Length: 125
Ligand SMILES: [Zn+2]
Image 1 (cartoon, protein in one colour):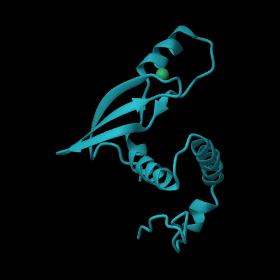
Image 2 (cartoon, rainbow, N blue to C red; image 1 turned 90 degrees about the horizontal axis):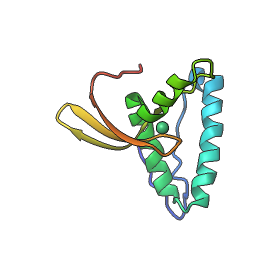
Image 3 (cartoon, rainbow, N blue to C red; image 1 turned 90 degrees about the vertical axis):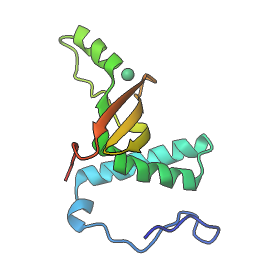
């Protein structure tokens, strides 16, 4: 069930129960803390509560279609002894047609690229 944010319920929160095994994961708490930092930063940029919730919902679906930044990956090849840098990013924009998702990606360094995947190829569960 989805509840949109409203004047009386600004976050749009509903009755929910996260599976306890998931909620107990340190990664889950890391995610919550990262989301809180991102929500605060987005708020500073004028992102509304509705936009935030929509973006997070889309990210949760798009996370299965992460792709590595081709420009940052090339840079990493030059640093043989350097620390590994994960250049993967979730799609920022998607277009789903037939059995494909085509994404436009933006990495943390602002590079953009496009990539497509079969809808059924990346499964995380
Ligand atoms: Zn990049």
